[in-house]
Length: 106
Image (cartoon, rainbow, N blue to C red; front, side, top):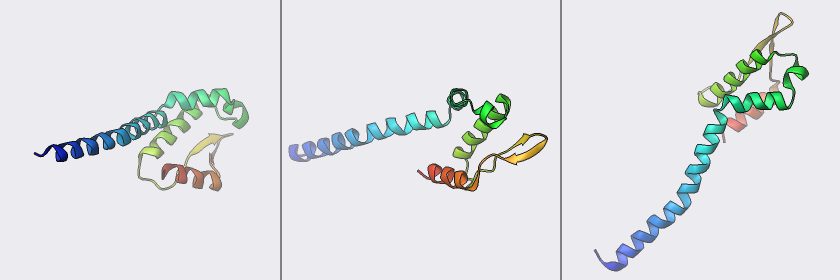
């Protein structure tokens, strides 16, 4: 193989590595964060979601699991229902459901 061709191929591979390695690291990091139930639960605690919504911490764990499942399945829209005062209620309003659909599409 000619030295010029070797140098060209080396530069192509080097450029691809420089571009792809950060993208791979970012993708893996986001994937880990999206699938980390502990992170959702810490957010629920930090923002006092249980007190603000009336859902128990156990129900919020279910909500976190449902969100994680939603981001990993083929469903277009999320349908999360939790019991409140003996009645099943839809957790997300239409605007929030559409927002989650957009986030999932990223």
